[in-house]
Length: 351
Image (tube, rainbow, N blue to C red; front, side, top):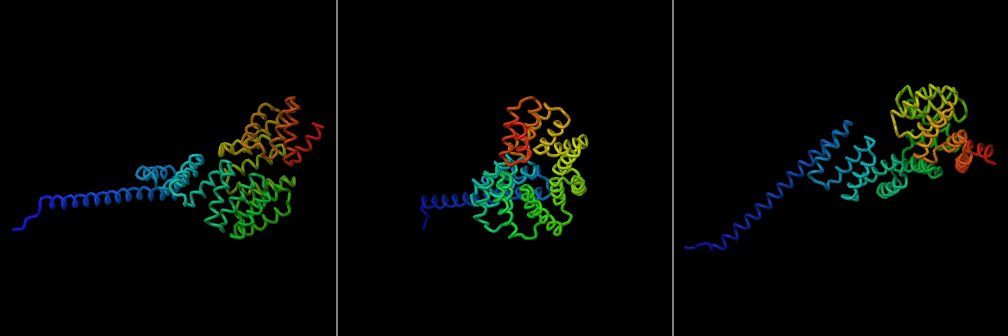
């Protein structure tokens, strides 16, 4: 009678055990992946509902199962940015890119977070990478235009917004941002034409009225400026930028206490609004409280040393505090930035 060799039987059993273990491992990996994706999808649903803390919690659950899950790192970064936690968002997006260097959306999202913390060079680096993958994307050109604007590279900003407009010619936000650059470079007629074009596209966009208000301010048409900013505030009564801009106009017409109320509301809504700290400093300067003015203006200066007219107002403040040498330093910097008020002050007090 034929009998199997005992050694041969042991080898067959061993092979079966190995196959069984491999199957268990595969099944275990599948179960982990299913659990991971379940948390990821729940995070996405929370993100869509703007439940950002919940979204982050679900993405963290997914990442605890699979720390190399690039999409979860990316979407966690998006949720953190929605909570204005931009530095944490950048860390999360760094991890997404480490895990998947070809994840284009992570570069795009990181660029947006860099813009929000004022790191425009890093944002531009990321946008250049995105542009390699998506060369004709309007949003990439738009964000590049924002970066150049904040860097005061106005010609590059104009060109980027024009490139964005080629790819999305009916987008009023591009026209509004172009109008801002033209306004800031004293091309007021060009800015007005763009705002008129934008209002034809979407007459209900409050940003149009906000910019039109500041254009009227530059023309010293203060009643018109107030009319336009009130139209913007009628849509978004607690918008920090609209509140601050109205406060700025009210300071110009000596309605100082009304201005202060709006500026304070702006700061409460957005504590990172550097223009609001500048304007509150102007309020204290106008009401003779120079030490308070200096404190607020220096805070705005620390946030942006080239903020519009910040050097001029700091110069006036320290001049009132009997520090002419320091005042002239500020006036000179304002003049070097091409600001009319600073130039006039330097000629008056320092020559």
